Image (cartoon, rainbow, N blue to C red; front, side, top):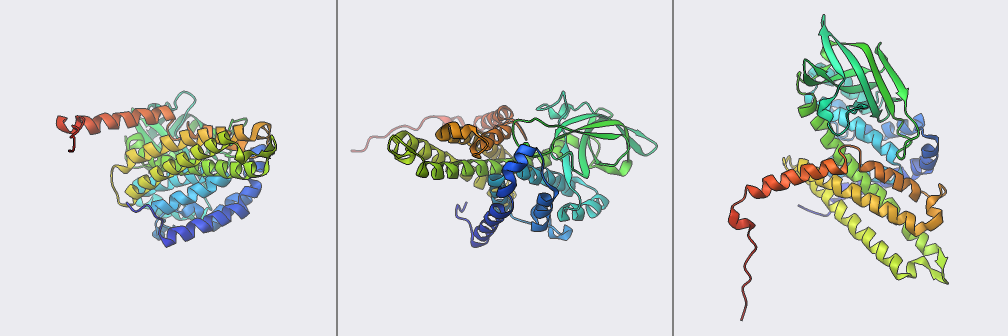
Length: 394
């Protein structure tokens, strides 16, 4: 693969960074403290075309290549992880609907999602169901061409403001996906507050109490819920989160470069202390390694390589753990200031930790990656797994 960005991608990256510097970063800390995203910020994302990034042009989308989409997630994640989470879940629903939705669902919803007139949220997690997502307890039954939903969803990102939810439930013992509008009778939305990180992502609980939706709101086929619809969405979600982690790590590194260049201890600037330089070196090296894994995953997605799914898991695993390590070191370098909300590194650390949990926790990624490793290498001839023999040269 080519590791250098092309001119179009470089220009897009510069445009994204300028937008984030001017329109997002000035509000990020305030949004975090208030646990709220102002509508004008969401409108800014919509006007910029962020919410239509990877939708096809036939539905008024930007149709970005996956590397450019990754750069967009990095820059927004560098500015505010909560807003990047909106991009994540909105894109997850958009892509799942584009791939598995009916013709009428696509024609009705995708242009509205592209314009930002409709905000989408992904409703999979439940109070008793997290990593074991295929075992959701919410149920659906069909009565007179109407699906009736009962159950509860939790930790739904931007659930407080979403207009449409992609909801997963068991129908006749099979995982299935449904579209549920926010104003549907029988749906009660309850805000969640007091979270550790991404505090402005306006989480919500969804309570379905004899919630009736039309039969045509089924997405895909019965039984396709987790294996097809959710799998598609989660793959895009992991990719978005991985790049968002690059953004957090980049912001943490930039904060430390600036801080150590200005702060003095023992008569010299912090940047002159060898242990500080060692920490900066590790930050930069691990950040570059994580970014390369994201490039690889994006490149494979662009060429339609099925390995992109596993490579995305690897990128998400490494980028999220790396972001947490870099943000943790950033707080350490800032000392007492790093524990104060006057400096953004404490927010970076809290947000980074959330990245290790959402869209497949660190441990879930480890299980998936290890399974891939065994399948990949045990399928090879025994000779190829043996250590190469060393040959002495005279």
